[in-house]
Length: 323
Image 1 (cartoon, helix red, strand yellow):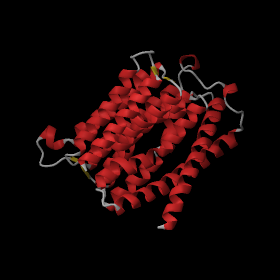
Image 2 (cartoon, one colour):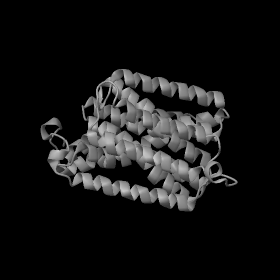
Image 3 (cartoon, rainbow, N blue to C red):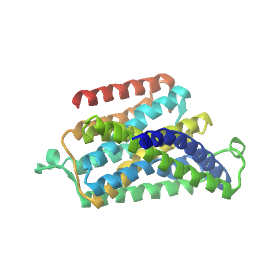
């Protein structure tokens, strides 16, 4: 138990430092290669910060803890938008590019809708039970491939159509150093995130909390800490595209890639109680899209960030009440 507590605390330190190194390396790499910060945020950073969710879901699927696997993804997506983007917006208003407003966020919304169509077999198709099957997993992975194709098409667009990272806005570093920082940062995120989740699950299990509640809260927040640390570090450095791209990209990764792979490993029963959480995920994503047209256009303002945080606290209170 003592070792678990120590690793839990050390995990936070490693996580924060890993996030800072990841943002620094990714920003430098974007500047050196002439790739937009948004592309880096939607790919390298999003994939790296989603690594804890992937690891937890793979282990949960292999061990048959499917409620943790599904709860982890739905909970993480809710945390990413309402809590993390809320905190980032309170720190500094987030100016969101037109591409993110009209393409990436709607794609994240499509991911939630697609998950609902595949998972709610009992409600939509009259089946005896709801299940994310092997075939559903392949469909999700197929949409993930489409998303990657879209991202690579962005990278090839004319620099004048995308706001690239300004070379003088980030520290000049060699290619080798940039890649090394990214690799070390990702490793730190994975290790730190796993130690934190292991500790949180240990403490929650000791209290006799259900797997679905653990997945939606403790595990979801724990695996989203890399996104929190990375986005906060990016906002602090004023790399807004990386901060927002990280969150939107992670949410798309979580559903299309991580849930897809998890379902391919083992079918995931989708219990009825997750329907509300799926609706909350859809509502949070839709809210993110709508707030970009309220107040300052294409900007998440501080008061909107506060609103996001309040909504997340209300959701957690609901989960606790639901038990």
